[in-house]
Length: 153
Image 1: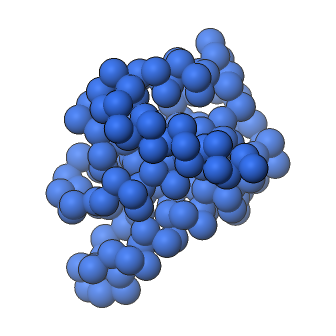
Image 2: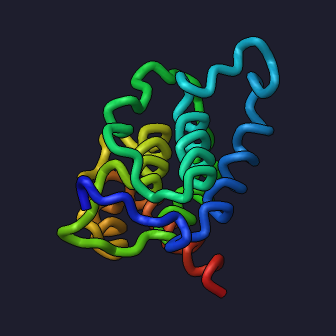
C-alpha cells in the first residue's frame, strides 16, 4: 500500500491508544521532565496513532525510519502484551499489500522493540505473525494469543 493513504476509519485507533496510555501512566517518567515521547517506543507509537486519528489516515509515509533506537527503559511483558494484542486485532491482514508505514505496523514494531530480541518482518497475516513470535519467544506468543482470544470474547 505504499503511496496510498488509507482512511483511519478502517480500524479502531482508540482501541490501540488506550493500552499505550496505560503504559505511559505507569511509567516512572510520566509527566516529568524526563518524559521524551519521541525517544520512547511507547511514546512514538502513541503519537503515531494520535496523529493518524487527527488526520484521518492509516499510513504515515516515511514514519518507520523515525522509530527511536535509543529507548533503553525496561518494559514489563505483561504491560506490553495487551497493547501488542490490540495491534494484531486491528490488523487488516493486508498480506502482500502490507505497509511498514501503517500506524498499526508502527505501533506493533515499537512494542516488539520493547520485549523481543529482534523485530519481526510482518508477513501481513496475524496467524503467521504469531508463529514468528513463537520462534523468538514461545511464552510471549502464548501470552499474546491468550490476550487476543480474551479481547475477542
